[in-house]
Length: 181
Image 1 (cartoon, rainbow, N blue to C red):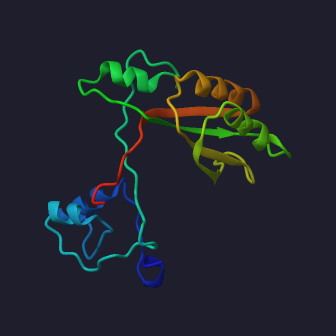
Image 2 (cartoon, rainbow, N blue to C red):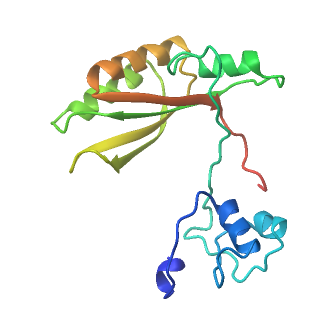
Image 3 (cartoon, rainbow, N blue to C red):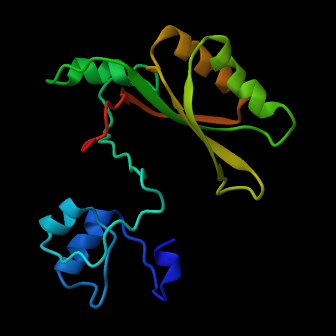
C-alpha cells in the first residue's frame, strides 16, 4: 500500500540487500529502496520512512539453499543436510514443494487428500498463475515434515500420481520464534 500511494516508478532487483548496494554504489541515482533497518545500516543509508509494511505482523522468511551431494530428487534433503552439516540440526522439519494439477473438478482435493489421510499437516498452501498456460495454476505448499519421513514420502508419491508436475524445493528445520520477538 505504501508504494502504491506514491507517484514513484518501481524497479525490481534480485533482492532487497542488492537494491541497497546499488544505491550505495551510486548505480541508481535519485532512487530509494525498501530495506530492513539492518541493511540500511550495513550500506550506510538514511532511513526515510519507518514501518511501511502493510500489516504490523508482516514477516519475510529467508532460507539458505544449496544442492546437496547425493541427495535424491527431493526425498531425504533434510537427512542429507544433517549428515553433511557440521552443525547438528534437530527437528521439527518443514518441506516446501510446488505442484500442478489439471484444471478439473476434484483434482486439487485428490492431490492433497494423501497428506490428510497420513496425518501430515500442510501449514501453507498458495496458488500462483502458471507461466506456461493461461488460467492454469501451480500450488506452493509447506508441509510440516521432512520429505524423507515415511508418511510424508508416501503422501508425496500419491501427490505425484495425482499431479501433472511436482517439484520438491527442499526440507529444512522449521523456524522457532521469529528474531526480535
